[in-house]
Image (cartoon, rainbow, N blue to C red):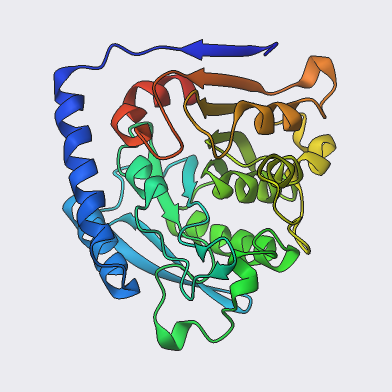
Length: 291
């Protein structure tokens, strides 16, 4: 692919051990699929790193988030916000889940390894929230309308709250999987995003649905259509060489919408699939993402 860098790793032994631990944790999570267990698992993971859960009212939704308990010693100029993927959207190809909370919160795992200034995590609408916080939750918001205008507006409002919490003036948005589409669409409607990074990001849902032979996401926006407002934002998009969900063709379709001199940078990462092993390698990758 023209303009796509490839990145290989020699994985240190300590990362192998950590990767194995993450796999074991993921398998343990899969043994209990209840939304409560998924919330408790994410809470425990965040708490172990000194982060606390947040609830952010935004339009018709209440969005869940996580942020460090301790304030930074200095007021940060730039806040990096990690946006979660689609989560457990479907139980089968034809049956939506009744709760999209992820089995494995990959974006949270990445956020907890952030080492380049202040960071926070933002879930998608209806993830990690309980009964009385789900009054406007409907499966359309994690299926056909997962990238709908009202989802973008709610996400942007929650980002405003996080930005105010940290007293930040600029934003870096990092989106995992479907969170990559959210991050791009939100960046396109704001003036304070100085960098956009995606990890296995579904940046062209139309190309993605064609790839998998599934119906179009009716009611959702397509980040590729927002190229004019995104072309001046520095971007880096990581693609796993072993990813069969969001393939390099999907990200290339997004990049192809930009004029030749404005095309975002794409980096292929060897030995990585859609979920494995981004978190284990994030410290090395993030050195490239946040120069």
